[in-house]
Image 1 (tube, helix red, strand yellow):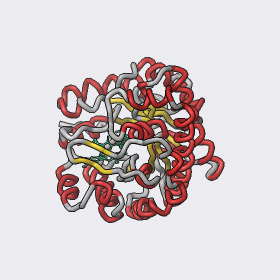
Image 2 (cartoon, rainbow, N blue to C red; image 1 turned 30 degrees about the vertical axis):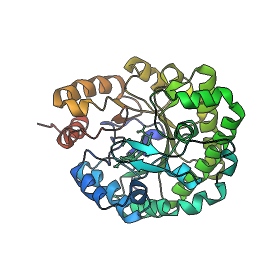
Image 3 (spheres, helix red, strand yellow; image 1 turned 90 degrees about the vertical axis):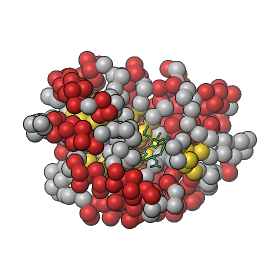
Length: 343
Ligand code: CP3
């Protein structure tokens, strides 16, 4: 197999300059994405149409030659596959009917892999089309983060509906997280079998929990996924992104068993360097620096590289690039990280 730098980093290697990819690298900041998006009936149709999902995944690779391609899909295909009525309202975000009494028992767990078959076709087509050197990443949402959308029926700022659900109906939440973890493990295994080189677990809402709840609802379900995936596919490479976890990043890699942790931009670089002594890290430029322009990119990249580039490190943003990100400044960022003397 050709050298895939991100896999090497996940095995503990330090590479200079570090490999780079960007969360949400396929998306609305790219004019060619916005054009492609127009021909989809809905966002979910887009995700389930392999020709379109392949094209969206390839767009940022052609433009920037990122070291990883990430499957174009969404974490909320999982509740869709489990029978919830997921849809995306343009300009607003995801919507579904909030879970009511008894709904957890009615989730259609037997239908998950057949429902998601188009995703596996996308992954295998991508692995055949991508340059050999490009790492292909599959992904899923972490159980807690996916549960927050299922419980509230939409995104909220503080996940109050889900935290209340957690305190009032802990057994129901535990059941839901187990179902999501088991289905997600099957889903990731199928992505790996279809050709993904590594998979990433997005826990975008892990930052709203107290210590005990974090252990129970973020650490344990991710550990359950990792154990199931590794039992079936020993050596599977796994990244996790517990966004906003702050102090709880300490020990996260060891407790969950993932190979690499993705850091959000609020993590102090001295702390990031400490975490890196325990294993590979990925991150963590504030995405708004790619909106603000070149001087803020240079300032942010220099500091991150000083702190992390000598160890096992993948350059990334600390969260997804926003729709107002500047495609030319993204190009500048990639070249600057690669030391290609961007002008
Ligand atoms: O390029 C990539 O990163 C691959 C594709 C990808 C998308 N979503 C496409 C998308 C990935 C990896 C995701 C993950 C995802 N989806 C997460 C975890 C990462 C994170 O950003 O925190 C979450 C929480 C979601 C749920 C989700 N999907 C929300 C809240 C929204 C609406 C807000 C928004 O950013 O638009 C989406 C929609 C979505 N997912 C879009 C894209 C490109 C925009 C929809 C469109 O084009 O109409």
